[in-house]
Image (cartoon, rainbow, N blue to C red; front, side, top):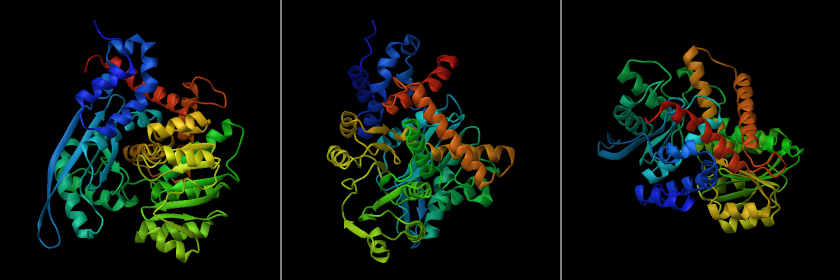
Length: 448
């Protein structure tokens, strides 16, 4: 007789099948907390082992990547692509280049991507990939040679109706252009097999801005549901990459007061809120010159806090946009004490499970990344649509589609939350909404 489904026995089985993968375990636990009670009420999902199948990738691809550096030394890295689930569309998800990349991180990201892509309402499956390659300090030619070597191994698994990677950490438009050039050379195809491409290669406008803009748009939906507006709200942000900078841009444009940005060196504090001119200067230095905030703080006459995080600043809204698990229990307590009323995850899983409980106990509205930061993959999906029909939409058209998608994600969260009152459970709503679409497709296929 099959055991009764409980959170503990489900997680025990998952950890036994996937040992020594803490990031993956954390991501699954956060989702399973919502889904196990839901599945117990829907035996068709339990009978078909949908959650067990959904937590097992369709395939894990690992390969050697050999290339020459500028001194003609042979270098070797490990490349990955995890094709997690294609029940509702071709595999879709970013490539990450980072020296510490491993399977646990990629499986966590691919699993999250399954729900995030489902929530966009677009026909997108889920995948994630990358390599333990560190692009920092490498010349353009070294990055190009690595990307070409990486794509030589990966190209056989890609295609516009099979698997469509995009950029992620360490993989920007430069890297995507090199990857796409090698894909085109190998396949003799100019198609939409990658997204995040430069505009002349078939890229979409608003792609760089999409994750940050989408996070801001989702928070506006949260506030509108609570009969509030973003105007005048004090916002604390971490990070100084695309997500944080463009989230800050949209918040400032909408009348909010952004008081912080951060990087590995520390954070800058603008007590009266960053001006558009200050943000423009930071964007130029961080995105083009990649200079640390410590140097920019002096130039822009902003107070810089070396080696610290901004969570102790007084705020009403928080947007962690830097990295996974950046907010633990102590940081969560700081935010609650600072007056934080709502938090939207701009990064992937930046809040630990224990920190989430602190927010829940304090009544802080919490929006998980699979809902709040889905804007990036949404515009990647829109780029795929533009490539298929051979059209190029204006920035205003793409931005309006993005706004509409984030509103639809918010509505799905409301629909599957215990209630549509002000105390919306966005975590439960996002998890169940994302699950149902994929689960129903898997049921329809039968056992495959």
